[in-house]
Amino acid sequence: MADKKVGKKDIAGLLEQWSQQFAVFAPSKESGVAAMAEWDGKDISFLDWYRNTVVPPKAIFLPPMEELFRFQKGKEGYNIEPPPKDKHKRLIFGVRPCDARAMAILDMTFEQALEDPYYLSRRKSAILVGLGCTNPCESCFCTSMGTSPTDQTNVDLMLIDIGDDFLIEEVTAKGKELIAKTSGLKGATKEDEAKAKQAKETAYNKVTRKLDTEGIKDRLLASFDDEEFWEKTAAKCISCGICTLLCPTCYCFDINDEMVKQEGTRFRSWDSCGFPNYTKMPMENPRQEKWRRVRQKVCHKYEFYPMTFNVIACTGCGRCIRLCPVNWDITQVIESVPARTEAKK
Amino acid sequence: MTVADTNQEFFAQGNVYLPHIAVIEKIVEETPGVRTYHFNFKDEKLRKEFTFQSGQFAQYSVLGTGEATFCISSSPTRRDHLEFAAQRVGKVTNALNRLGVGAEIGFRGPYGNSFPIDSLKDKNLVFVGGGIGLAPLRSLIWNVLDYRDKYKKIDIVYGARTPADLCFKYDLEAWDKDKTVNMVTTVDRGDDGWKGKVGVVPKILEEVAPSAGESVAIVCGPPIMIRFTFPALEKLGFKPEQMLTTLEKRMKCGIGKCGRCNIGNLYVCRDGPVFSYAQIKDFVSSEY
Image 1 (cartoon, rainbow over the protein chains, first blue to last red):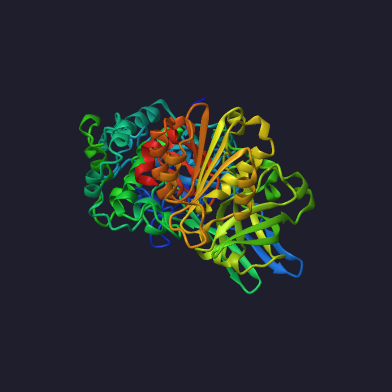
Image 2: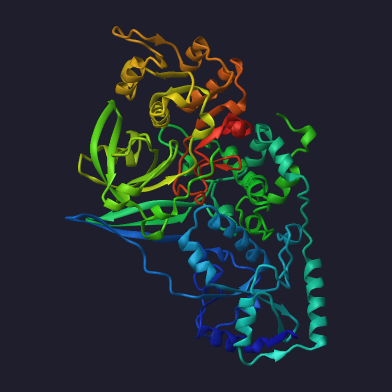
């Protein structure tokens, strides 16, 4: 079946239609910083300013803070009350391929061994509508990390900018089903498809930052005890945690209780391996020194995650480079990891 | 190691993050600062059906204060109640310390893998423990002693800083009396009444010099003791595959998601807490 297309001016109508069935999320600056937010029913100005969000879409599935349960202490002891079942079906419009790949990487952690019911209930019922990048940032290096500005692999539907329209690629069964039920779409012509192909090539070539990850797992393993290298690598880091909190593949969280009188809440909130308290135990802290924490961050993404899941936990979205207040640059770090033969043991 | 027992049926309401309510039945003051809590589930069905393996741990909560991680320190062969031991050092352990018999706590678990009990059969077992690190070992020791004829020689080398810091003194006495067990107790600093050995655990272990042939050493104690015990065992001829330990790290979720308890690519909660030295030796020197 031939692809469909939708006019840029018809996007509001399309989102309106999908809003009947889904809680629609789209890029927004409403909160002061670009993030995926529940669509307000009219504003599609993001089509003009959107390159990528500052807050990655993971925040919809793993919110910065969420309640795990409530509890009350009564005469008969404690009563535990889980949050109501999630009834929302979410449609995330405008997901970039780097962030879609990051969601697939996050799924591995939340699905493995014991399942995480909070993350997975939201994730499994959601539809990701990808929007191909036409204007990647200087800090982006997705083409080195197994994806590209228009990669459709991890979304349900992929939209490619072809001028006045978006070409719609139907990727998954879920995506096909949604398109079958969507009205007002036009059929794409051969010419549209040629334009999409051209757009993809142009976007691909705009990603100029490259990272060679060949053999990185082994290089990191060999350099694990190279304290001098890690000291140097960590020197300018201020342990603000932003590169992890806003990383689309980072998932670390903390769990805490709050109780007022006889009623309380247990909640989880984003945490970061960059923070000294992260691994602190009452008697000791294995990562008190900053270089150990920076080593953890780098090795987790480029060595440990590949060892466990066979994939590097970085998609080249470039956020950690763009957002770092001291210009720490993961691509420079990875390139400077000593080759195996030079590594100090 | 044995694969983690997932025991899906033990989750409260099918949700791995919801704790079961348990009731403290007895409190034993082990040392100034260390207590053993005997507890049972409030839910009768769970009380009957709950099972675990030596080495597994759980997340215990004082609701309103938070959760902390402790191994189940009682033996799965003795199931009229469960036990855990806690040293009063942090927020949750201090809150626990304020609880008395009859108080309710939250329990999530059992989590993690366990000691590979089947592969210990017909082996000489060398238990090396320090301080409160005896807690997971005693679960296994009692488990093994309840099926004594399945195992060969048993050595236990246990130490603490001072005689007052020795935990589970009633166990130490029982094992000392047991003719099938070679029990060696040591302290770093003795006092007037102390008649046992004086010296740090790795040094005393070298004196005891258990044979490495057909043997497995099971080690648990403070990180400093663990770091020096592995080389001592290597000197005695033990191979990294013959040394087991159970590690402790700060944990929040207990199920391999919250991120903080890793040693290299291994999560202590998901891939452990029981590891062979062979598994962790690349990272243990600088991460533990």
